[in-house]
Length: 416
Image 1 (cartoon, helix red, strand yellow):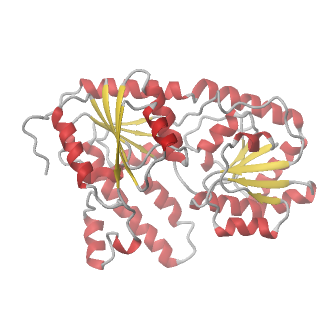
Image 2: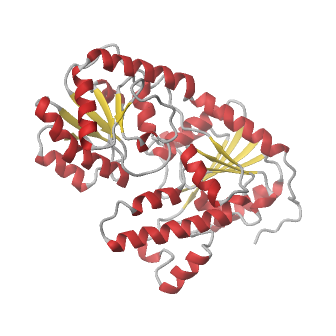
Image 3: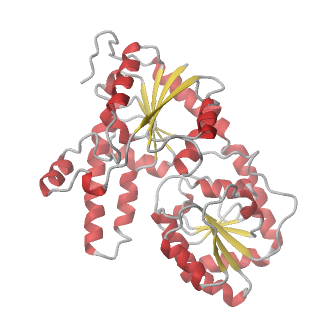
C-alpha cells in the first residue's frame, strides 16, 4: 500500500517515547508498504537524522515551525478559556506555529487520491485536516491525554494546580469526543487508555497496539554485574518520571540502605530536572547521568530495574527494554498498564514504599530469583512485544480501512 504518514515532529533520533514507538514500527512497516513522511520540525535536521529517515520512508518532507511561547497559546483570556472548554478548536493542543505550507501540501496529496491510507501520528494535527472523515485516515494517539490529566489532578497539593488539570481534563475529553470519530480507526497502546477513550467516543473504532522492543538490540551481555546497583531510566524532565524517581530516592532507597548499605541508585536519561540533579549532589550513592548514547551498559551494570511511577499513561517502553535485557523488575501496578504480566513470575508489583523496598531487597539478595524473573521477562518480550508482531497488527488495520467505502471526491475537494 501507499501510505501518507503525517507527524508532529521527526521520529528520529530516538529521544523519547514517541520516537521509540514510531521509528522502529514504521521501519518494520516499510518492508511491505511505500511510506511518505510529512513532518514538522523545530530545528534543521542533521545528515545522520535525514539518512535514518530516508532508510524508512521513500519520501521525506520537513516543514520548519517554531514553538509557541506560553503567552502566545490559546486560553489566555477567560473568554477563550470558556469557549475552548465548551468546544475546543482543532488547534487546542497545538504547541507550535502554524505551517500554511504543510497544510497546502497535505491538501494536494489528499486530492491526488494516490494514497491508500492517511496515517496521522498525533491528535494535535487536527487543524491540518478539514473534511478528514472523507479519507481512509488512521490516527495513532499512543495514549489518552485525558486519562493523564485525570490521574494528575489527584496528585496535586495546591488547589490552583488541581483546578488547572481539571479544566484540561474536561477540555481534552470534549476535544477527543469531537475529533476522534473523524478517523476510520484509532490505535492506542494500552487497554486502560482504550477503555477511557471508548467511553468518550463510543462510536469510534479503537484498536490496542502495544509498543514493541528491538530484542536483537536490547540483548543481555554474557558478563553480569554483582554490585548492588538499582537503575531507573527515562526522559528525566517528564513529570511522571521525575515524581517516580523522587519517590524512590526519598522514601524507598533509605529503607533499602538499612539492610544493604552499599546499594546505589542510578538515574539514566536526558534533561534531568533540577530536583533530580540535586539528589546526586546530596547523596553519594545516587548517580544522575543525563543523556547517554546507549542505555544497554547501564542495564548490564545493574542487578535490579525499578519503575516506581505514580502517574502517567500508556505502555512504559522502559519496562519492555529492561525485560529484553533480562533484568528483574520491581514496578508499581500503574507502571505496567497495557503490559501482560504475572506478578512474581516476570515482575514484582509493589505500590507503597515498604513493599517496594522489600521487593528490591529480596531481589538484591536472591540470585536465583533474579535469574528466574529476568529469563521469564526476556521470553515474554520475544513472544509478545516484537516490532514485527505490532506491525502485523497495523497491516490488518490498514486492510480494514482500505476496504471501507469513503465519500471523498479528489478532483472536487478544495480544502477550507
